Image (cartoon, rainbow, N blue to C red):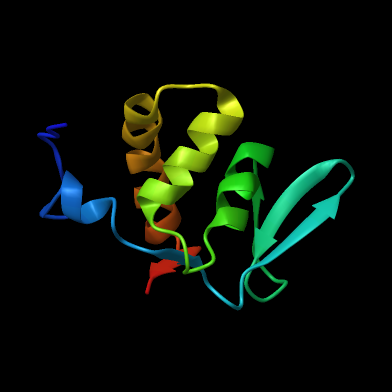
Length: 102
């Protein structure tokens, strides 16, 4: 399997071995049927349920590859398609500070 794109100057093979972890001070709150993320209770981000499900898998123990395999099984999708779809999601989760890599 050959991947040709890079993630923050990493080859795909290196990126999928990273271990994302939801930051400890991120809280997810359910309110009026919606999910919201907050660090301090002053600023909130509305998050989709699928993003919450991905965040629940980000415990620092699973690699991105393992997260993708779990999602591919649950969604009955091709692993390669899932891993490509996760790239921008993890970029955004890291950009807003919801995850870090351990």
